[in-house]
Image: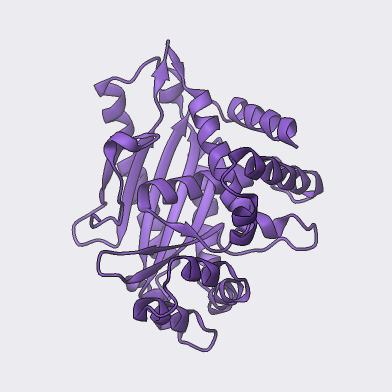
Length: 313
């Protein structure tokens, strides 16, 4: 596991990694810069759609549901798509049609594939009821490091046309998350469902001292100061990119331009978050992971994903 907490095989990943490192030395901010491939002069939309679809189920189904449906992917996908279709139909918010569920699916896929993370609170599952739309983090995952210690990941995902707007919204959401009330609510949600305990049972962790430490930290009455010592905030942003629109194949020039742009934007996010969270006690113990992914056209990507959802549902 690197100092960025990533853990992946370069020969077995979906999107090419341009940058995977600390933003600055001895930093609590990290950047994972990713790009999709091109084929026959076109951005590989099908690869992006397949990645999203294959990862949606784990954001929309509980651990128990996934186990019950078994290994047959079509069962999971069909149930997941019906659930997402219900959410989209019932959505009356001002963010309707922005693709929040797709952003969450992308973040889950990246956390699973590049960080070996496991989902323990499927937020889309709880959004299916029109009266039960949870606030707070867009995703909840855990990881275990080489020493066996557990880490909690509360994710923020954006799927926007404009990167600047996405950054502003993400910073605002994370600032809101760091109220004591919101963090305690997240702990209650995690401990109030059975996914974490079922994961521990399946992996024979119930008697594991490190796992018991995790459950102790997640108890409502345990100080949030302890939570912040194991807390990670992944910030995933899919955004529309002019450079990618005007590219027909991956070249070294394209990769260098994207990498440099992502690094500059990651520093921008770091500055904005430092300002927004300066008054939060223990914030220096929290790790932040900026994950940036450019697409050529959000409308086209959304249109294709929506057609797939309708076809399955």
